[in-house]
Amino acid sequence: MPINKESIAITLSIAAVTIASYGAFFTTAPSTSHLQSQNMHDSRSSNEIDRSNTSVSNNPLLKDLQTQVTALKLELTNLKLSNIGPNENVSSPDIKELVLAVIEEKEQKEIEELRDKNPLYGFYADLPEDYDLRIKSDPAFTKSVNEELRNKILSTHYTDLERLGALSQLQMNMFILNKSQMPEYDYEAVGSILDLATVSNDEKFKIQAIEITTQAPVSDYRLVERFSTILKQDNNDYVRTLASQGLINQYYQAKGTKNGDIQQVAEQILSLYQNTSDEKVKSLLHEMVGDEVMLEELRKHSQG
Image (cartoon, rainbow, N blue to C red; front, side, top):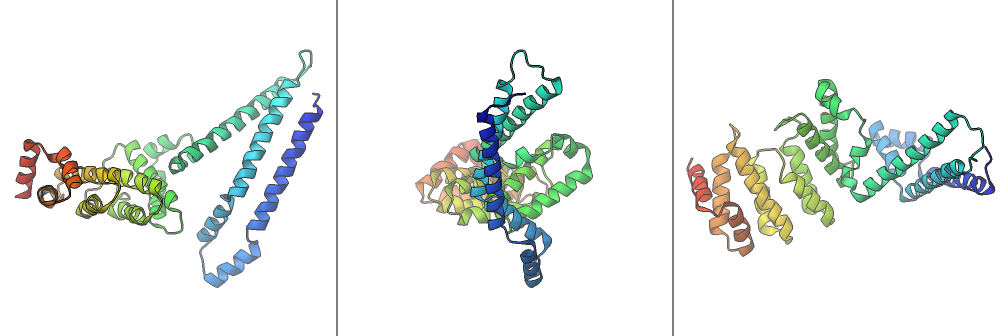
């Protein structure tokens, strides 16, 4: 198969970028001996070292170089296909290999674009194709995945976005199993994400975190208290709207739970609605519970 000078140049470019990638990696990454000595000095676990290496792989420079390599590979493969003459004798396996290479590179590019558009759901691209079926059919696998996700949510060794992504995946697993509750998805998990949201300076992360937690399938009066605080104190109207929805979500969950604190929840919502001097709080709650039928229901539950 003839390859012209242009394709050779691209091949050399790939090699150059790849070498640059390795150079950047070894410049940035600590040596094995250094990691081992640091491990002995700090008594850190092997998992922590793995996370350190992962952070190196997420280096923006390396990511940019990897993108360049992918683009060059795709261009080279397309050139190879275009250089096949009409009368040239090329075996079917060669054609198949080139076509598959193009498809693979394009799929990888689409995955990277998905990650860039919404990093929160980047985990979805890494799931095996049979993930849904394994969650449904393999209890041991499901338990292992859920426990790992819960540990990730609670761990301070991951980024805020990674921890929120773990909560999203845990919630997805619950929906796959058509369950309304799971032991791994509890107040501690949801509360830890709320902790991150309340101190975060990243408004986008904060909104995503509160969007997920206010709809959490967890009935706990501590969430009622936290959503009440957000509703009263946050300066973002959309976040306050989410908090009001979270309160009502807690009310309906408490109604459907045997051990739910329905009386406390109803009392809290009524107190906020009737006693607040904040017109925004009043308006948001009025949209949720302002009709007389709903108010009467709240009064009934608040009296036990």
